[in-house]
Length: 255
Length: 243
Image 1 (cartoon, chains in turn orange, red):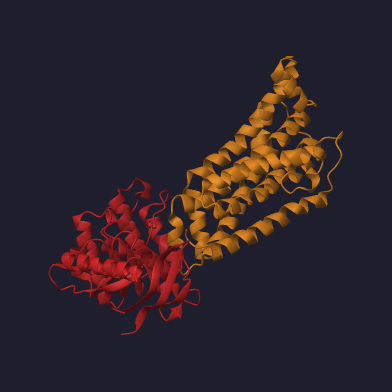
Image 2 (cartoon, rainbow over the protein chains, first blue to last red):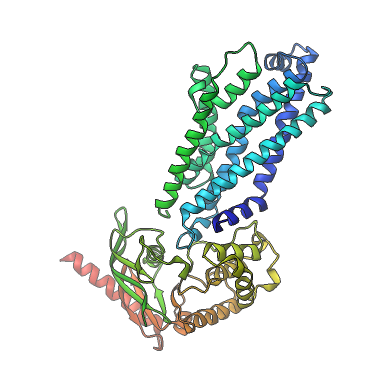
């Protein structure tokens, strides 16, 4: 393994940001989904109850996974975007980027290594999401999941991987903007743009909304489906953004 | 002795401001060259040009015989410009290992290289401490160790005595002279004329982006000579404007 990969993996393992974010992504959306399910079941009639009933239209595991999918579509993009923003933006914010010049390891290798370790981290979180969501569902008293529920859990894991790939775009914002703030601004913009694309009816063609739309549509019989091949937009856009970011790291001067 | 660094007619501006103007400079292996100048004189910009952090608008910068932007053997270069290589979440040993790896030390040689530089910088007692918990001076030492762990042939240090206590300054002096003694060329900038006079073979004065002369490291009244040189350069510039 190249030096840049070893060093970036070490930095990712030792930092609090990826660990805390992983913990939050594994627990918070699942707990929120279970709470929404419980509130929808209560039939409270207040604003929160009505909101919960709008989000959760089915009972049991199906309802829980519907809520989890919808929550994770946005929360996953936000959470993973934060880690991407940290990974690239910290070099500028902490001014450590200067140390990466004049080195036997080219900066483009460092940027590529960052993408690789982020992809590994995202895959790990996505795999752990299955048992975490399962445990929360069991804890919420939903009983043992049937085949459909297990398929739904796997779909959430796939959604998580695709969301992570979408979030890699934040690397370009962090690099060109040279820090966290432009990255966080870009992240909020992407989440908002994904919502607007869905409302405008073009969400199935927008790389940042298509994973969520696909996952929700696949789980909800009343919704139209999103062709699976549309998901290819996500790795394609990630590859374009990755290439642009690596090129930026190769060419950009230290400001 | 071969040149480890050569700059010819180098220019670099930032907007309307000419940070480095028509600058010629060379540094031989085994030599310590000190750059002195007022704040904003162009010392850091020159070092950034040498390390490829910024590109020259015109002119040539050669490092270890190859043009910057070409096939420079960067494994032969060590530097501390800007912020020290000290990631706060990593321990001192991890930081030094990371720096050695990135500078091209083979994995099998990293441990011995790190142990050696830890001893040279007297950092052994902090080896398992996270860099984020160190004092500014000790982070500076970690940055110096990161720059030297791979035994570079060209060492570039920008204001290396910043944040160092008196014992750190003495240690740095020994390290710089030791590196030069082993054949490395050292380019070092400083505000402290007395300090650079103790280690430098040559002292080059840079002012308003230009090299305006040299000071004799063995001379007396260095400060007076420095300000006289700067004053003369300012007068010449004003005279030039008047014409």
